[in-house]
Image (cartoon, rainbow, N blue to C red; front, side, top):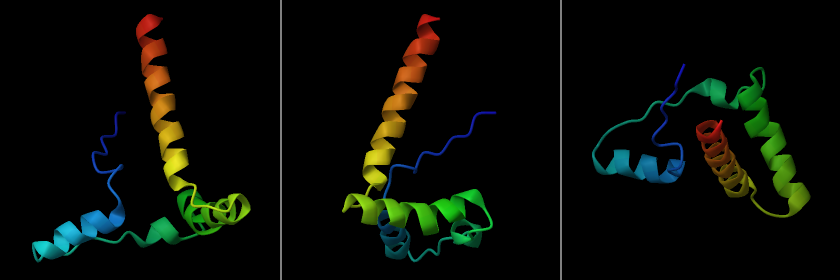
Length: 80
């Protein structure tokens, strides 16, 4: 199944500012921060730990790595 997530690269604050400028209210999925779920545990425990461990915010580096991995996968898929 293909999942299309066009705003994944847009910072949350930018989306919230866009909504606010238009008098719209966004939806906050509380499970995103719930450590019962893998993504919640990742966001509340692992990302802060990585930032402390490496002395900087690591989200953009991980995003870049993911983008490059997708590009490599797409290239290899096209060649196979």
